Image (cartoon, rainbow, N blue to C red; front, side, top):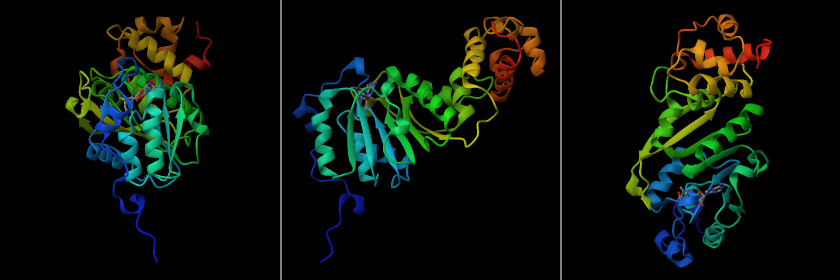
Length: 295
Ligand code: SAM
């Protein structure tokens, strides 16, 4: 006799699990601000986020901060073959173990700080990250994953991440936009960025102060232009650290010979940081590395 369809094969949610509100009450998972906890309890929404990361059926989905497991359930219901979830708050582990038991062999839990874990070693390739990120460390985590991609463009196939809308707009911003800055350049240098959809404050328990946005980052096979990431970080930090100043002034903190540096790249010293393209910043980073111009 054929075996009955599983939640995985049918695309149906597991009926073995209680609603998330019950899970939170049962395990006493009151949200903690210090851990950036804003939980998603609507399983239709978490499945929609999971679908934005499809296909999920190959390799490993790494989830950061599963909390009580709403997005984790969404990923598993949408057919993720293997989810490895990293959670810093040990209070969540029993609730997450119930999810693991409802989807046998498909969810592995790691109790720890995602900032301290090398994702390139987890599970089988291809690896992708899906997360409703804790806002207090979202930028630090993203920079860490961009550093990983700089070393190995194939380390991650995609990142589907929830950020505060303001951060999402910075990631996708183009030159001359007020949101354009360091994060735009580092992210766009290594990834294609798509803003997928907004999530209103009321979708979270407790609601955050601002709207959130799901962002899809697809790593480029080669960066937009050659550059060393530390030099690119240095030149963008200098340029945007004083974004209203002209480059001939703002770049003084990165180079002793700003005039030579700009001339090498054919960039006028009267321009401001927001007017330069990602490729312009890469040229400046290369010039920093090649000249004896470093401080
Ligand atoms: N994924 C859940 C959801 O969508 O309902 C929870 C998202 S909540 C915005 C962020 C989660 O990240 C929390 O569960 C929090 O405990 C966890 N977290 C915070 N800092 C972390 C870190 N450094 N490493 C791993 N998890 C972290």
